[in-house]
Image (cartoon, rainbow, N blue to C red; front, side, top):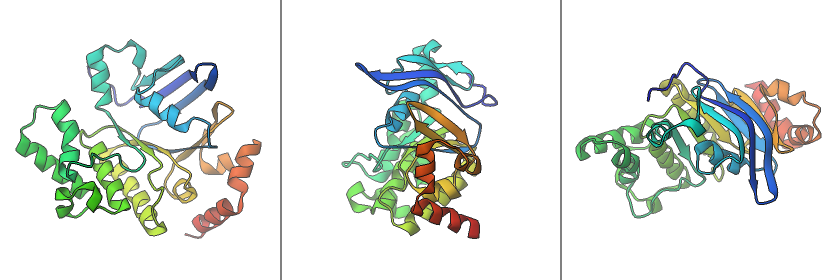
Length: 261
């Protein structure tokens, strides 16, 4: 099937997720616009990763609907779901690379599974993705154990982009990186968004990422998205958790640094 990429990449309506009697999300509503970067924040235990896994289809929703480019996921046939999955890339925490494979081989995994390309062409495309994420050419032949933390993140990002998706999900992409590496990764995401017309959802606690990279910030609290708006509007929210999160000394320092750029 052909998706209409002029429609919103993702719309979540009345989503409910739970594990047994424990309700994680209730009546959660959220829409992503095309080619925007949205930062998802929330306290520990609010279910940010559960939400991402549900949006990716790794967990079934217990209620509500999720639409991708105007299509309700629950109404899609298996072949259509596979077509949809090819439009979504994901970078899990730590990169989640296969340790027994080189970077090039890791990037080739989705190409092997979902295309009929020749091995030589897959290798060429993998090397292009290595270059795209800012890794040196020789990195393609290295194993994950040979890479620094920042390089592993970029290698994982290259794999997530192997099929040229329209939707990109990033789970704590700058966690564990030094400030210089984190800033460079943020800039890379901005460049890739513009170059590949990506729509990006970032789960992050990195205040610098929120202030410098995200078009909007979605706050997950009280089992739903309390607000999803530009940072200045989020900062005006009267919700106690939002005020505490963005009103702390680290947040004020990041905001001041952003204002001085």
